[in-house]
Length: 142
Image (cartoon, rainbow, N blue to C red; front, side, top):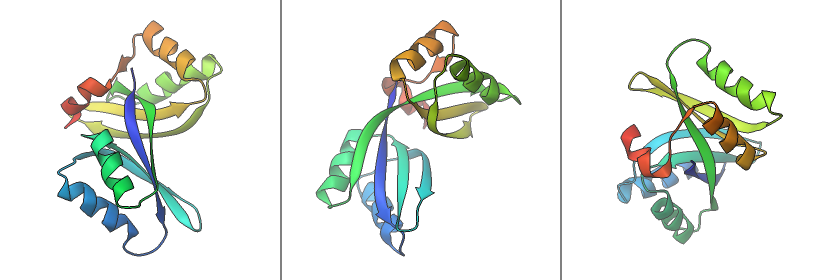
């Protein structure tokens, strides 16, 4: 019920982001979604991509600090308030969202998020009929 996400730690200086993107381009790894959260010294570049394990290995071999984790991806109707409705379900069960990013694709909204209780979040997704995107289905977002 989850997808793999890369978290790439990059310095806040010119050229570091483009280095990561070039490596992924050379390996023909397609980005599906990404976001950068920054601090004074570095940024965390979170990526959902077509081949997360390959991307992880390519970046590690290049000496780039990267981790691979599981996050939830939920597809929603593209209507005002649908994201709020979905997040309210988790909040109602006492589940905190550590971070979230979203995008629209082919008339659907997609929420990517990590929680403090993955097991309970999976139960909320199932019991409320939310449309979870699984790793095996990630290619349909391309």
